[in-house]
Length: 62
Image (cartoon, rainbow, N blue to C red; front, top):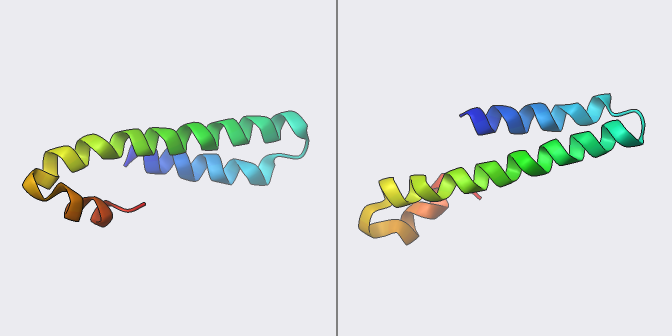
């Protein structure tokens, strides 16, 4: 849930980027948040997926 909130805030930061460096910061935050979301997804699939990991992974989202 936290990674989702950080992703939303990082995406919203693009609205405030009015020059190059704020844009770079927004891109960095969005990229880091996306990577954190993907990294957090694997243990969830491993824990809750059980024997049907391949069928459970698409349920968690892209």
